[in-house]
Structures are given as structure tokens and as C-alpha cells.
Image (tube, rainbow, N blue to C red; front, side):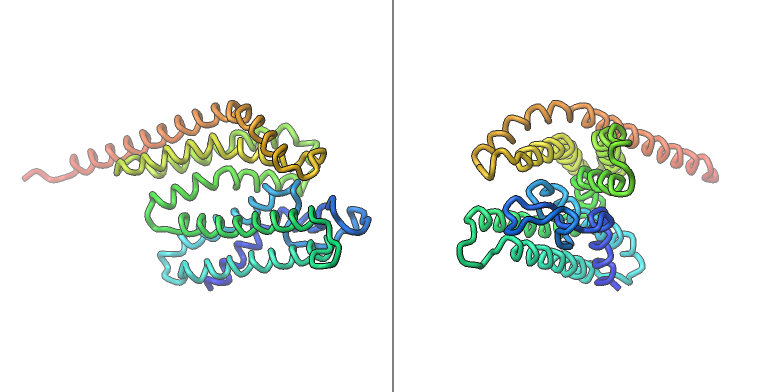
Length: 296
């Protein structure tokens, strides 16, 4: 059952991509002129323009598997290691299929292949492997029974999960008709998720304050990283100039950080409010129990 659960979680993580038809994005270094609707099928959107999307699809599979495992722990029917293996096999299979297609289209391994194609292939493959490993890391955090580690995994996953939701909505409806709403969702929903998780985590024992610090920093920095990397990798005019890409990312990153201040404040206030409400409810319960005790 565990292996099937991990496999299914990995498939669900890929759904926003698969429901679009799974046509490989156009490749700048493809050896033959191929229109978009004739590009081959791939289980992952391997492209420098879709690098963050690829990361999100894999990470959400890990988060879903972790949440399901944590919920089913009490039944004793699911072992975390078997879920992890099922998830890993699914994601490695998707990675293998997609990169075999990419290698064929780029002519990797053939005489006279463009050196830029080899660099592009190696870079995308390395990024995809790291994404699979990060998905495993999130799975093991979220699936833990202890509240602290599970909370840490969930706050780290807030931005990728929101990006996944936006991608799913975009795949199902006309993105232009809901562009404003999608922008608001991407900005504010991670804050709501992080705030709710921090409220659930609480502040006792005090070491859980570390989750608050990491969660709020991640909420502030991760969207800025996504924005900077997406813009740098997506600028075709740079034509693979890694130094120029890095400079563009460094220029965009500070401006993107400024935009993230509001959501961080919202998450902190929401988390604190939930903690206060939980404390008040618990205190009221203890008071009622005290009043109900019979006098000696």
C-alpha cells in the first residue's frame, strides 16, 4: 500500500503538466524544426523557461506523499520508507522518460553535437535530480509524527504548493481571464498557509520558534528566488550566457524581496492570532474542568 501511495502522490504532483497534454516545450537547440503541437510527449516540462515549474511538480509530489503518510501513520498500514520508494521510483521514471526524449531531440551522444546542447542537457538533468532529492527531503519532514519537523516541511512547501495550485488553475481555465486573481493568489496564499501552519505548530516548547524563523524567512525569500531565476533563465536574448543570467538574477532579486514583506507580516500576525486563540480555548477548558471537580 505504501508504494502505491507514493506512486499516486507523484502522479498527482505531475497533473498540472499532464492535463495540458504533456507536449515538450519548444527547445532552442532542437535539431529539427518542429511546431509546438508536434513536439514529443514528455512526463516533465524540461526547459529553461519551465525550470521552476519542473521543481514545483516534483516537490508537491513529495509534500502530498508526506501529508498522506502522516495522516495514515495511526492506522499502522503505511510505512514511510515504502511510500518514499514508491514516490522515488515514479519521479525517477518520469525523469528518465523526459530526458531520453530531450537527448534524442538535441542529438546528445551523436558526432558534432552543439556544445551548448550538451551544457543545457547536463544543467537541466542536474537540476531535475536535485529536485527529486528535495522532494524526498520534504516528504521525510512532512511525514514525521512530531509537530515541529512536520511544520517545518509544510512552511517550506507553502510557495511551491501555491505555484502548483496556480499552475493547475491555469491549465484548466483561460489564464488571461484570471490573470489578476492568479497573481493575488501567488502573492498571498503562501502567507495564509504559513500562518496557519505556524499557528498549529505553536511556540511551546520554545525550540519551535526556530520553525517560525525559518518559515517566515522562506516565505520572504522563496518567491523572490523563483522570480529572479525564472526571469534570468527565461531571457532568450542572453543565449546561455551564464554570467549574464547570474547578473540579471542578482538585479531582480532585491526588488522581488521588497514585494514579499507584506505576506511575511500577514503570516506572522495570522500565526500569532491562532496561537492566542488556541491558548484561550485551552485555558477555558482547564477552568471548566476545575469548576467541575467535586469539593473534598
